[in-house]
Amino acid sequence: MDFVLEFDQETDGRWMAEIPELPGVLAYGETRMQAGARVKALALRVLADRMENENCLPTINSIAFTAQNEPLAVN
Image (cartoon, rainbow, N blue to C red; front, side):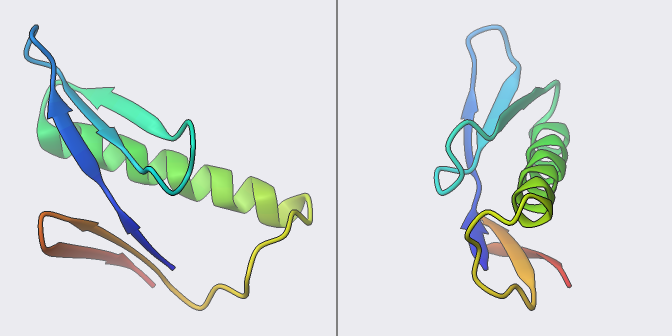
């Protein structure tokens, strides 16, 4: 499964990262990297919860997060 991280910087300087393919999965951080790390961790928790509760998920062999053409994989 491949997920694209989208980033926005707030007027107060904080960064927000979200994964549009997973509604509600967004996180804030003081830096872009921190927001990205937090949103990836949240995405993994959401996917684990869905699998644990037998929600409909395709077989997952790998998960990849991509931000601005930079692959950040979790295998």
